[in-house]
Amino acid sequence: MRKLKLIWDFRGPVSLKTAEHHLVHLKEYISINNLDITITGTETLSEMHSLAYLVVNESEMKIIRDTLKPHRGQIYVQD
Image (tube, rainbow, N blue to C red):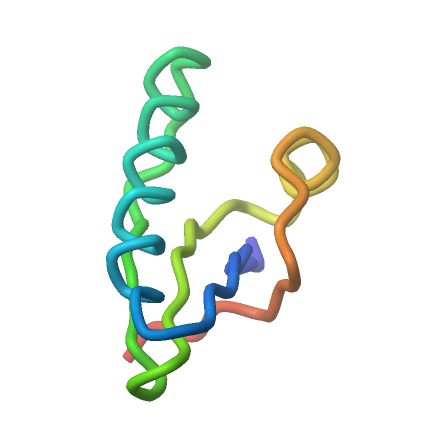
């Protein structure tokens, strides 16, 4: 089954702190809704751009997308 990475972008000098804080809320949502989502995290793309993300099965994407409103998404490829 294909996996999708839902992404929330944050920009500015405190973008990493904002992404880390947003990740706390994403994990709360996962816990409250008893979702089987284990891949989450933050990434720093530059000094002024960080993101928070979670990875979902494609079949679960629409409901989570419509509820959490990520800024963008992409196909998840494991390293």
